[in-house]
Length: 453
Ligand SMILES: Cc1ncc(COP(=O)(O)O)c(C=O)c1O
Image (cartoon, rainbow, N blue to C red):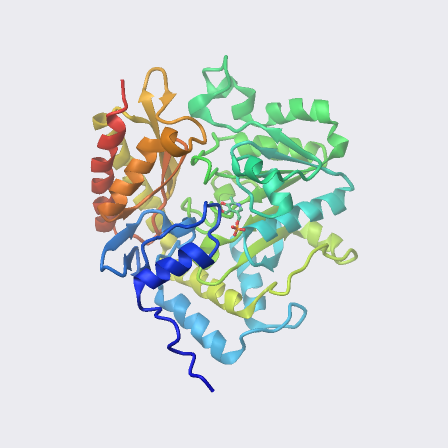
């Protein structure tokens, strides 16, 4: 028999790039890219085949909340692989039950049971199906500045430009505006008097037209992630919660990015004491080491499902390797007091960014919560003209793409959406590393300043 082990020169970065460009299909991208080949990572850093080191100010896809190669998570995956790699979702399994129990420790008090998925989209897809079955209603209200996943239903709910790219069109999606206080709807200067920023009054108006008896759920990112880091004003989520309760509409909090310490609490809803009917999460639950998502429901929904089958399922629901890594990651976060660290580092980061705003006229707003931060860039602070247009592509996005490339060359991995740079390093980043990243960001922002008038 041929020895296939050395058939491919996987050690050769050029070969890896060739195969990437010609035989691998990359998400949300035109094909043919020839990327840097990443050969390792540790903590807040990763490195490439040329020996260049990068500070991960993005935590990859905002999921490596404990950074790269956290030893306790890696060990838990190895130990579970030695014991039992896979057992079907209907079987009892120690790590699956353990993770379900831990979830009840850290979710709001009304949330008492969890369906484990392979990621955020499957969690949201299952959540909206449950909402429709439970209420017997069809419509789901979602917001414009949102990303909920890449499956048919979740892309239909997604408001960001990928929604148009894919022509996702699940019937029954209704949209509302976001509490985007930096750019309130025309005619409103003060969030305190703006129905959209208050939440409930805007939702009431939409329900008046839609008929509340046809609406199953409101789904929202508690803190908007991909679409520009938007933190709701105090009172917003409570107000949405009250309006949903008034009409028997379920509230689904999508905490896929905001959850697991990203904002300095286990879940962003904890900042305001809000109890959604369903919380979905993924990403930070195990720092992304094995695919894992969660859909956690209230006791009321769980009791309903004692008589009504859960309308959904996955071969890999509650995968033992994923559950073992989730248990290890949450315990590590508790042992290392990550929520406190994230809160403190987040405050320091925003203070430093505010200092940078004194120097860089392109910074229109610094915003964020915990380690979920962003800076919105403008050409002019008075007019607030965005540095690049919404959803800019190609040449119109040039200053942003130039900044990303410059930062990467300087060893800082950043990301952006439209005119917002997102700053979401691992929650356990050291202060020294964070300052190193902000120093590179400082130099990077000179590119944006050149566009200012
Ligand atoms: C808020 C939010 N919801 C859902 C998803 C989809 O998660 P996944 O890619 O794991 O399906 C994402 C992914 O970025 C997200 O940010």
